[in-house]
Structures are given as C-alpha cells and as structure tokens.
Image (cartoon, rainbow, N blue to C red; front, side, top):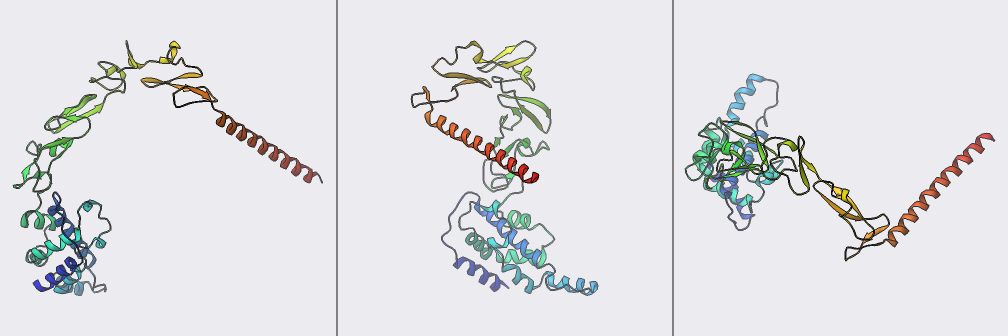
Length: 319
C-alpha cells in the first residue's frame, strides 16, 4: 500500500518546481492536503453503489469505505488545486501542490492510518494538529499550542476584538492585533474617537464617536463630544455642530469664486462658466461654454424634431 502512495506523490512532485518557504506554510499546506483528501472521500462515498437494495448497499459500502480501490481513487485528486471548488484560503503559498505532495510522501503511513482506522475523526485535527503537529487548534499558537489571550477567561481569542498572532499555527507570539476602535494588550478598551457602548467579562463593544468630536466622547451623537474638531462649534444643548464658513463672506475672495460649505470645512469653487487654471485662478471656461452651448442646441433640435413628428402624426390621422 505504501508503494501506491509513493507513486502518486512522486508524480505530483515531478511536475512541480523548487519549494519556496513562507511563514506558516506547513500548517496551511497540511490543511490543503486534508481538503483535497476530504473532497475525494465525498466524491467516492457512493461511487460504485447506486442500487435499490439497502441491505446489500450497507454491507458492501462498509467494505468499500476503507478499501484499497477507493483509496486509489481518492489519491488521484489529492494535492491538486483542481479538486477544490474554491482555493482562496490557500492563496499566497508558492508551489502549493509540490509542498502538499512532499507532505503526502513524507507522512504516507500516517495518512494510511487515518484512512483505514481514523475516519471517524476530523482529519484536520487528527492529522495536522495531533499527529504531524504542524498546526494548533483555533485560539492557540506557538510550538506548544498555548492559549491565545482571552480563552482562559472563557472568551474568544483577544476577547473577539482582535487577531491573535499565530492563531492556529505552531508559530507566532500570541499578541493581539486589535480591530479598528479597540486598543490595549487584550483589545478590551476603546480607542480614541470611540466610546464604550457595553462591557461584559467576555469583552467590550465600542462605537465610533460623532464625526465632529475631537478625541474622546461619552456617547453617540454630537452631544456626546467632549471637544469639537476644527470646523465644528460646541453649541449648548446640541453638541458639536458644523460651522458654515461661507456665512461671513470672507472665505473665498478671489475673482469669480464661490464658497461651498462642506461638513467640517468649506471649499472655493468657480462660478458657472469658469474653471481654475494651474495657478488656482478662476478663468473663463471657453471650451466648457462651447460644449454646453452645443449640448443645449442639440436638445432644442431634438425637441423640434419631436414636435414635427407629432404634427405629422396628427395630419396623417386627419387624412
């Protein structure tokens, strides 16, 4: 039986190129092997038995489940990208099929043991975590598969608000990289411009402050702001409100400029029929006026054509 596995592995290796090592590739490659193996098991589950005799099928399916014939069929698709409907989670691994075939060859006896005696177990956990020790269970990291921060407290890794470095691999530091809005070693605090909406032993929920707030806030909306950003003013009973810089008529003073208020700021645009040159001055837009005139003339011409068509139809009806 070992000879069959060896021949399949060698045929894949011979068609591949030099191995390139990348971080955590052995764990991900093992899971790729498992995914293609599982896919083969699914495709061959009832491959040779499709009759109506249930008792006969159960008897023979039991034999076929761990038969050498089925294993050969399964191995035909192992370590091949084409065996999977989607390989997105395995992107970034150079020479994936080659590395997978190398694992298949190196651990052929262990894979045979799974096929013949361990199919009741999850193959990814049994093979990649427990036997080959290439991966860790979710929420664990490092050589000894230590728990990520948060698990001891009964919460998710990094209290559900960050990524544990090395999660699921035999690599990494276990440090939390927090999502936007969260901070701290365990991602249990709200970052600047976020406020704490709720908090339990298993984590905190942070929400973003109002866009007019500067730094911290205590609650949702403009009234929750402690301070206001530039372009906003603190109004009693209303909180941070947008300042209309265009109201004092001193914001845009160049020839042919008009002031346009924006949220938290303003901008100086040109009057209709003008556009800014390389120096930022508003100059007469000759080309734009010409194009606008042509467009207007075309619209008028279309309207006239429509009216002529209507007159023709009315005359035709009268005749």
